[in-house]
Image (cartoon, rainbow, N blue to C red; front, side, top):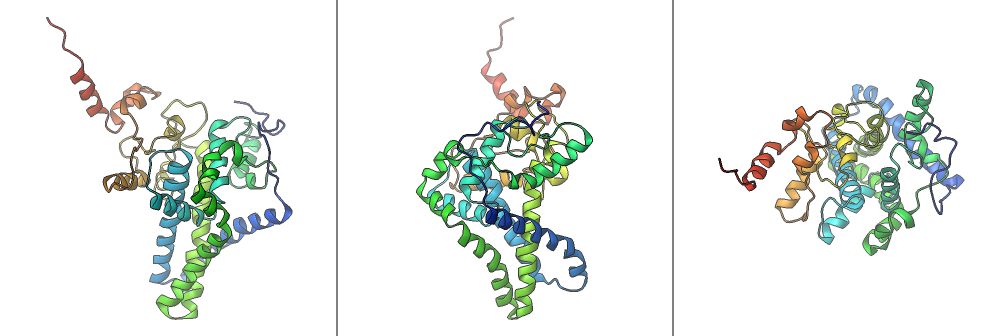
Length: 335
C-alpha cells in the first residue's frame, strides 16, 4: 500500500472542482447537525423530547439510512439485485433525503473508492497521508469528512454513466435541492401537526431533522474511516477494509466492511453467523414479495476459500448446506 498518497494526484479524468459557495454549504451540513448531536443529551435531559420526537427520529433515520444502504449502495452502486421502477424511485428518493449528495455523485464516489480502495486515487482513504500515528489521525479525519472539501471530485461520466443515463435517476439527482428541503421540513411539519403546537414543530425539527441528519451522516462516514483502520479482517482483501461489530446495527449491516470489499456485489455483508445485517434481511423480504429479483446472495464455498483461517469456514452462513449439496453431486467411488 502506498504511503505517499498526499503527494500524488488521483487517477482522475475530467475533475469537477468545488465552488466557494458549495464549500460553505457542505460545511454547514457537516457542522450544524454535529452541533445538534453535541447538545442532544442536555436538551433531552431538560424535557425537550417527547414520544412524537422519538418516532420522528426512528422513522426518518430508518427511511433515509436504508435509502443509502439498500438503495444508493447495494442497489445502485453495486447492482446487488434488480427491482421494479417504483422501488427504484422510492430508494433513490429515500437515499437522497439522507442529504449525502445527489445519487449520481454518490455512486460515482463510491465506485471510484472501490476501484482504488486504500491506494492512490481513493477519494477517502484514511491511509492517504501515511502510516505514522499522526498521519493516521489526519487520515481518519480526512476519510470521515475532510474529503468533502478536497478539490477533485469523482467524474460521474466516468464512474456512474448508467445512473446519469437513467431518466428517473437523473431527474431525482436534479431534484436534490427540493429533496433536501423536504427532508429538513417534514419532521417539523409532522411534529407540529401531531402535537398541534409550535413546540412540537420545534422539537420535531431538532430531533427528526438536525439530530437525525447528524446521526445518519456520521454512521455512514464511519464506514469510510473507522472501518478501514480498526476492527477485524477475517477475509483476505487487497485493502484494509475491516469489520466493526458495534456499528452493525446503526449502519444496518454496512460495517461488515471486510466482506463487502471481498465480494462487493453481494446483497449480504454480514456473512458469518452472528453478524446482524438488517439491510440484507429487508432485501430478502423484498425478494419474497417479488419486489427484488436476481438477488446476488453470497456463495458460502467461495467465501470460505477467502477466509484467512480455514477453520472459520463453518461460521459462514449456509456453509454446511453448501458442503452437503456439493457432496450430493459427487459420485461415491466404488470400493
